[in-house]
Amino acid sequence: MKKLLFNSFFILPLILLGFKAQAQFSGDTFEKAKESKTANLTYVYSEAPGFAANINGEVQGVCVDVMSDFEFFLLDNYGITVNSTMEKEHANNFTSYLNAIKNSSNGVFGLSNTTITQKRKASYNFSPPYITNIGMMLSNEALPTLNDISKIAEVFAGKKAVTVKGSTNEDQILQIKKKYYPSLTIEYVDSFDEALVAITNSTDYFTNIDFTYYLDATKSKKPIKRHPAGDQTAEEFGIVMPKNSDWDKPFQEFLTESYRTSPSYRKIIANHLGRNALQLLDAVVQEK
Image (cartoon, rainbow, N blue to C red; front, top):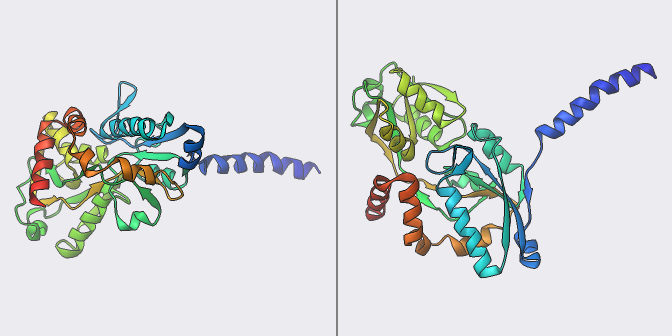
């Protein structure tokens, strides 16, 4: 009996720790909210300049303001009042942020620069795209400019790529490695901010990263360089939800092309990403 009791002191904390590790976020369903006229929702964010960033203790950005407009839409069209909670524990790890959304249920929304992909659609629900991303290849300004992607093994000889595991940016680097640079070494970090720090502080690395990081870095006058050969504009960002969420339905009604061209939306982009971002996005639209 003493032996069994002794073992239980070790087993119980491990069980509780396991439950904590698998802890899920949750929120009300859309169907329940339509009946009660109240929605308790959970927002989980991952740091992304301009999209969702902790500024003086408050999470701000395009995603936050889009969700605010969505809340007004729900009130105006369904009479639903939203009570939201912002979860910050996965802010600095994009991979754990995605896993947290995946393991959550119902009224949970992921706020970050999350690319909509066919592979992710198997595990998540997405809103319609709220922005078109421009992926850019960046390095320390001391590196020579890469104007032809097929020459990357020559121009970036001996350099390493740094990226975030499970991101579409990693996918881009893996494609480059396969097509043009088979001997390329790839190093992984938890966040895109860390990737930016790596190329800022060293000439040993390059990265594929979203355009907002480039705009933020140039604004801060960091010693980085954009390589035109690495530009990629096929990605679109969406608000990500658990697979069992039914909130994608009202999002389809709200986040339309009409909303994305509205003065309200363009003001959100200008406020958080700057006028240069508006010009870049307008150029992308014209190219389509």
